[in-house]
Amino acid sequence: MIHLQDITKVYPMGKQELTVLKGVNLHIEQGELVAIMGPSGSGKTTILNLIGCLDKPTSGSYLLEDREVSRLSSGELAQVRSRKIGFVFQTFNLLPRFSALANVELGMRYAGGSDRRRAMEALAKVGLSDRTNHRPTELSGGEQQRVAIARALVKNPPIILADEPTGNLDSRSGEEIISILTSLHAEQGITLVLITHDASIAHHCQRIINLKDGQVVGEERV
Amino acid sequence: MKKWLEPLTTAWVGVVTHKLRSFLTILGIVIGVGAVITLMSVGKGAEARILSNIQSMGSNLINISPGAFRFGGVRGAAGGVRTLTMEDAEAISQQVSYISTVAPSYSSNLQLVVGSQNTNSQVTGVTPEHISVNNMKIASGTFFSAEEYQRSAKVAVLGSNVANTLFGSANPIGQQMRMGTIIVHVIGVLQSKGAGFGSPDDAILIPLTAMQQAVAQPRTPQGGRIVSSIALTVSDKDKADSVVEQITSLLRTRHRLAPSADNDFTVRSMEEIASTLSETMGTMTLLLGAIAAISLLVGGIGVMNIMLVSVLERTREIGIRKALGAREWDIWGQFLIEAAFLTFAGGIIGIICGWGISSILDRMGVMTTLVTPDIVILAVSVSVGIGLFFGFYPAWNASRLNPIEALRAE
Image (cartoon, rainbow over all chains, first blue to last red):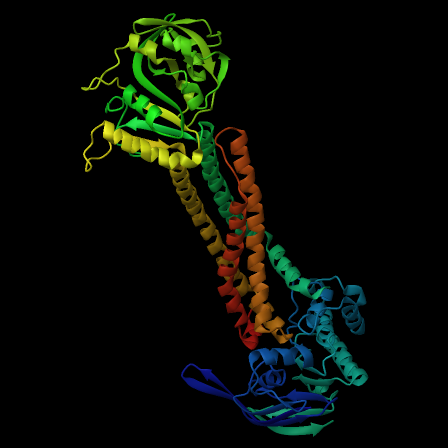
């Protein structure tokens, strides 16, 4: 499903260039639950952004569902994001002026239009049926992240990408989030890729990919 | 939710999120649009009023005055140039076709004594046709008849202002007034036509024959009796231009002007005066509108300023929307609609305010105003146009943001 081949990513830093990814090869099958681990600056987030079509590789090939997406225009990439990818961020990234329900509806906005009933269902799946009209500031961190998960899954994407989804949460809320994500994977067969520092969380996954200095340095099956 | 409604509700949320800021931005546009509408309605009102005054004097009226007339200039002041004569008037009446009535008049400043009041006023000696040629109406009493004219009856007809000034609330009919060396009786008061261009409200009219007894009517070296002006009406309005031409060539012959010499008189139809005036007033209206448009421009710059701030503030929101799959077009449209929304709201409120102010000015009698549909359409389209124009760049800025960098913004 996700097929990265010889992917490099170079950022221009003034007159110098910063090479973040140095030839990454990665396969992720449909329905897999994969954790990406590695020290800071190893390129984890860059890989996730490339997989999520937020960014384009400097060179290399990226086949998403057998379609070459590494050379698409920004408008075409936006369309791929709207149909295929759900994002969950470390900092939740909810719109502060919108209610939980409106934030979830926003997840469908660019994928064919909002549907209040489906947004309510998505909130029910993350256990927030009684919090639909609360604003993010009125919710705990764990609840905010659950809203963000509902927003990611409301459009039924084949892939959900989570960048340190528990990084800003206490351990109890973090476990809740992980159990929601893993059950979504188990029940709906969503392909789930998450970045984490936490080995105990990584061990909930089927496969752990270790990254260092912009290269895949090891894989382990759990 | 309906799909086409979503960008509008998003814009609405953007506007109400910062209520004070949106209010101030809208206020800038309100003032601009309101000023355009108020000032242009003042211009249009003045234009309409002057035209209707001219219409009320009769649009088939032609005026001949001595001296080369220059509109807006002061050349050829009454008495300054003495070229028109009674004989000219008679010749025109006999030789020019399509003329229904000719009414020469002679004005002079005379000392008026009414009771204990002693004033110096302009008195006009006229023929009985004067009232019909100038489209005047009698409010009370009568105008003098042809028979009274023939026997130089010492009677006077007053404009409404003059009657008021001289006699106050007392009925002026039958009152006596001394006018130079003669004593006249007031027999009538003219209906008011309202202040304005060539208003008869200040006129004191007596028979021209009586005038000749009160003051020696000057004569030209050839012996013609000098008049101040000749008014005449054409029987067929479409022939006005030809009548003006005929009069011009007749008078040039009578005055023995060399072909190279300028006319020593001016013939103007009311139609011509009206079109000159309306052109002048139209220019004034445009000028007023242009001055007001400056404030609209300033308001538009305010919109742009706020939109730039708003884009900067919502960088993260833009990043989130892009991550959710928003295309550049979606982001661009969102901010453009928000800018257009601000200016459109400002435009609508501005119309209401401008309309209200101009109708208050009109009702209070400060000045005549007229709001025409073209002003309203102009103001609204300009205000929305300003929103789109000044919203374009900030919206384009927003749409071009890199999603990854935007997501990292504080």
